[in-house]
Image (cartoon, rainbow, N blue to C red):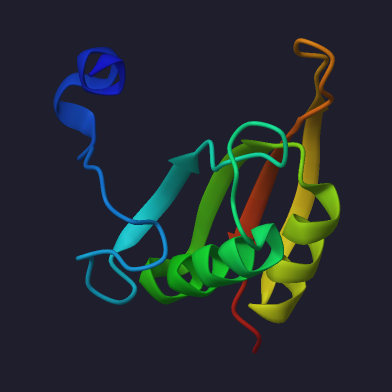
Length: 112
């Protein structure tokens, strides 16, 4: 896989269902993902998919951990991040084969 070649020994790369991973709670520094988009594949309920993904991400991320992802599901990612206590930042907008995805950064912020 390209990610493993590019990162060499500095990261652990694995495939899992993003809604239920084998990772321990608060064990991951960063998640980089390209989840399904509305027009990319047929998903029954994109909103539920993102909500479940964000809930699992919030569980496995360390305090102050980050998610970087590419998606065109702007409303879904905004709602899912808010529901799961993740702060959302838009980093880049793209134009890709007629779609307009964005690169987002989400952070697990710890309230004091």
